[in-house]
Length: 270
Image (cartoon, rainbow, N blue to C red; front, side):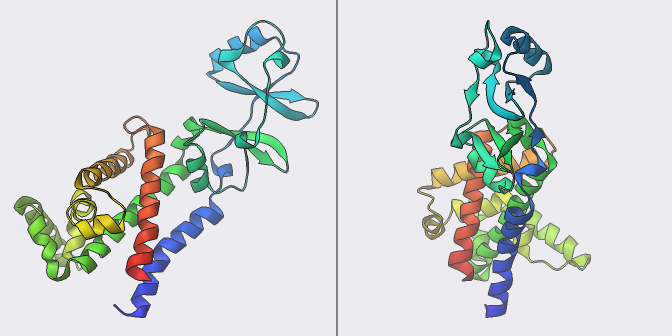
């Protein structure tokens, strides 16, 4: 493999990562924060929050949002008696990359957005259904599938991976490959494998590859492969994300994919 090819392979992941970290920020999915006043009646506000399906609301003091309330904590008295102050864990800048937000939300169901040192917006799990999040997940899964094929080609010389694929699955791949060749599409047989086969060849079947990617056992590899397939299927079928795999698990799977891409660049292309 010559240096030019190595550089081209490296840039595919680096370019995608730079795009996500530079151009797609939390502002692309954040909503303007709704608020009430400190002296508002907490019971009335709670009823309104039930009606509008809000779990959290900003509390305004003067010209700024000074804190927030949670619907389930409200009872008799003014809102200010239930107001919580913002902590550093609650706040992120509006310039925070969206991909970083996903990791932050693993430990919090919401986060408040700072614009010029003022709280103006809010992101909750419901905002993760929006197109920019789906675009990021799709980008990472697409790049994962491409990298899996490249690693299989490198690690299994002479198509030695064929003996690890069931005859039926191999036959389908060969048939698809022939159809692609007839259409003058430039690809190889590995690219015609289903993603489940590629995942098994990298995360399950080969001990050396499992070691490279810190997969402790075949059982762990099968679990990883199953979760990645589930996420890919949810995305492909336009399902509401979070119904199959919980959002915490989706974020964990994205971290696995991100780590895989980082390791694959370091081990196979540098």
